[in-house]
Every structure is written in C-alpha cells, then in structure tokens.
Amino acid sequence: MPGVGVHARQVSKVYATRRGERVHALDQVSLETVPGEFVSVLGPSGCGKSTMLMLIAGLILPSEGEIRVAGEPLVRPRADASMVFQRDVLLDWRSVLDNVLLPVEIKHLDRRRYRARADELLGRVGLSDFESKYPSELSGGMRQRVAICRALIQDPSLLLMDEPFGALDALTREQMSLDLQRMWAAARNSVLFITHSIEEAVFLSDRVVVMSPRPGRIVEILAVGLSRPRGAHTRTEPAFVALVDRIRNIFRAQGVLSDA
Amino acid sequence: MATTRTATVLSAGRFSAGRRARIWLAEQALVAGIVIAVFVAWEVGVSVFRVPPFVLPPPSQIVTHLVSARALLLEHTWVTASEVVIGFLLSVAIGVPLAVGIVYSRIFEKVAYTFIVPLQTIPKVALAPLVVLWFGYGLLPKVVVACLISFFPVVIASVVGFRAIEQEMLYLARSLNASEWQVFLKFRLPCALPNIFGGFKVGIGQAVVGAVVGEFIAAERGLGYLQIVSSSKLETSLLFGAVAVISLVGLVLFGVLVALERLAMPWHQPADTSGTGA
Image 1 (cartoon, rainbow over the protein chains, first blue to last red):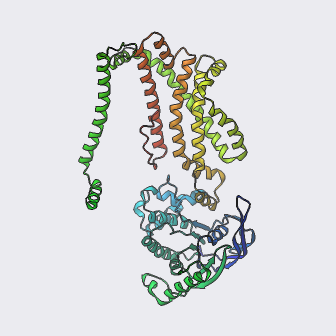
Image 2: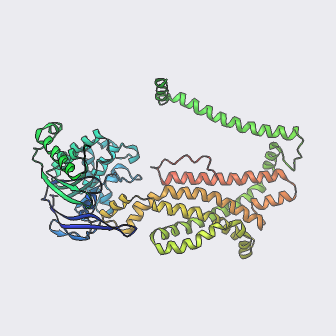
Image 3: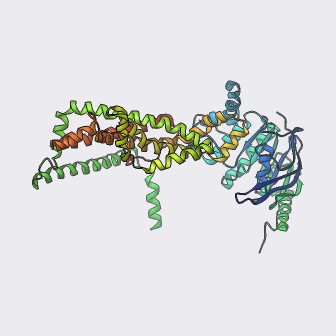
C-alpha cells in the first residue's frame, strides 16, 4: 500500500498524575508529513516523542487539537497502520511464523494468503530457517527483525516505530538501520520513527523533527538532503557530519547537552 | 590466576556427551547413596538402641507391612486420591474464573477480596469440624476441605498471572483492534499460564493436606482414617506406610501437573521445581 500523510494540528496532551498534578507531555505540536516520507522524531527522554507516536497510532486521544491520517480524523487505531515497539513484544508461545501472522489472525483474514508474504519478509531479513523456532531461541536483533516483519505483514501505509532499536547493541543497531532502509525502499510506505540517536535519525530520514522536553515541543524540523541508498559511506560524508553537528548544537542550546 | 579461572569456565561448556553422562550418573549415585545410608542407619539404630517397633518400626518392617496390606492400602488410597482430585478441580473451576472477575472488575475485586482474605487467615483445619457438621461423613466434606485449602493459592497465582501482561503487549493488541475476547484468549491467558501452573502446584499439595485432615475428623475410609485406626491399634508400621502412600499420592499428582504444564506450554522452560514437591 502506498504511504499516507499524517497531519497533526496544535496537538496537546495533558496527563493527570496520581497526586492530581497535571503534566504537559505535549504542547501545541503541529506536524505534517507527505505520503511515503520517512520522518524521525528526535529528542531526549520526557520530550513527549513516544506520546506523539501513541497519539498518531490512535492508542490515546489528544487533550487538544486534531490528528488526521490520509485526510481522515483519527478515532481509533487504523487498519492500515502498524507499530513496532522498543521491546519486540513477541508472543513467547508462538513460533516465529505464527508471530508474524498474528495480525492476520486477529483480523480474521485468510492465513494462507499471507503465508507467502511472511516467508518473503522473513527471508529478506535472513530468518527463513527460523520460522518454526520460538522467540526464546532467538537473539535480540533477530527478535526485533521478527517484530518488524509482523508490522509489515499487511503492507501498512503507515509504519509507527517507537525506538525500535533502543534495546539493541550498537553494531546490531547499525545493521538494523540498513535493513530498515532497504525494506522501506521496497515498500515506500510512510514511516514515523522515534529515536534518541541523532545519527540514526539523520541516517534514515527524509526529515528530522527535533523536540525539547517539559513541555514537549517541536524545536526545529530539518530536511536531510543526503542521497539514497545510504550506506556506511554516508556516515563520513560532510553533509551528514554537518547535520549531526547542527542537531547536537540545538540540544546544547536547549540545555539538553552541556560540555561542563 | 584470573586466566586459569577463565579457562576453567570456558571448558565447562566443552564437556563431551560421554563426560556429561558420567557426571550425571555420579550425581544420581550420590543422591541414591545418601538415601540408602539414611535408611540403613535407621534400621541399624532401631535394633542397636532397642527402640520398640510401636514407637519407631524399622524400615524393613514398614516395607513388609506395606506389601502385605497392599489391597487395604490401595482401597483407601483410591478414596483419598479421589477426594484430593475432586477438591482440587473444584478449586480450579471456582478459582480461575474468580481471578478473571477480579482482574476485569474493580468492584468485583473489592467484594471478592473482602471475603477471600479473611477466609484465608482462618486456618482451614479449624473449619473442618464445621464442614463435617454440614456435609456429613461421606466424600463431600473432604472434598470441601481440600477445595477450601487449595483455593487461595490458585486464585492469587491466577490473579498475578492475568496481570503479568506487559503494557506494550496490550498496546500491540489494541493497535490491531483486537476484541476484548481476543485480548484475553490470545494475549492475557498464555501470559498467565506460568503463574497459574505455579498456583496449581502449590494448590495440589494443599488439597492433599485438606483431604487427609478431613479424614482425621470424620471418616470411615481413606488414608487419614487408616492412620487414625492404626494409631489406636499401635500398628505403627502401617501408620508409617499410610504416611508414605499419602506423600506418594501428592508426588504423583504433582508429577501429573508438571506433565500437563509441559504439554500446555511447550515454549516454556519451567524454573527448577524439584524440592517444591507436595
């Protein structure tokens, strides 16, 4: 399915804590993405980036403002959107293949029709031989690959990823970035990617949304002009280094980073 | 020094299959040797110190009595085992649905805990005479006591289990627009199984205690009844035999649960439960 655009207008989210205090997780956030765009939301902990993803996923409702996906107001999780979480959230009691086919089963669709698609997805991330294994028999990187295959089984128009590589080691993480880029290049869906890694955001995205904490606000939206496909060589390109440096300076100005 | 230790740790994973089998065999032999030594010491000690058999019979006499009275023991075992199994199944049939209610409804939780927690603080043994008064001398009062006593671990473990699901998994379910029934069946229940089986394993042992205590108070059949009778006749070796068979009943039922657990959760590597035996 081709990508869909997301349009968030003046969205705020206020939580009430147990002691009755009000916490502004998001404050007047506006964002518009075009179909097929890869957008990263980058910020430190507590900047409301996960809250933003939950809102766009339709899992929580905004306190103020409006969110439209493909031009339609969002009232519940969309059938053409899927999520990947920081933890893989695989079901331990299902084989790799059955985990990938979980959305098909929940939605009462024809399992046989999606079987070939599951094989193809797993093959593309090198897990063909692991279809009948249980998740407990896989490494962290393999598990997260299965979770991504699960999210892609129905060719979602919108892929929502909440720090999907946050729990992986640095090398696996770099490989996953390459894999994700390749899969996205084939699918051309819209991706909203939450991360706290500047390099990861710049490497993967068409645009990077930089956020600041308490209350969560958008500080700046930067376009990444780097050519695709990107690879190991990209990380040493002057444009890449300059953009990473620029974002780092934004965080320094915000007081998120300090040399002292 | 550090290098040598690392080397040892590394080589631990490189034992050949034959060497591992020999180590396993040696461990089994050690355990068996200790058990045999205890019984030999018992046998010898009783005869050396001239302990009268009605106080402490030697193991040989207990075994002989076990064999000669096997028909009698089997008959009573059948009675006790039925009480235990029916009582336990009853506690599961009531306890698990109750746990579901507690997890899904806050009001239900408050009402249920108002009754369950005080009930749990009462020693169930103290309720046994009352149960006998209400339900007579037959099978029913023992089943009720067994159920009462195994009920609490089953309920609590199930509640903990149904709540063990992680928030992100619930988000995943909701992002797929799963129905409440699907969330329960495909996410919550499988997540809860390890805890639920943990509760069952505690519960089955408790059910054995409940049935035997019920038989102590009022019965004409069952291993608990057999103990009371042997005790009054100073047939101490039969008393020991009954104890051994009661523990065997518990062990067998525990083993059945472990087998069921493996069958229900082939993906699960259960924690080592040896020593938790009923």
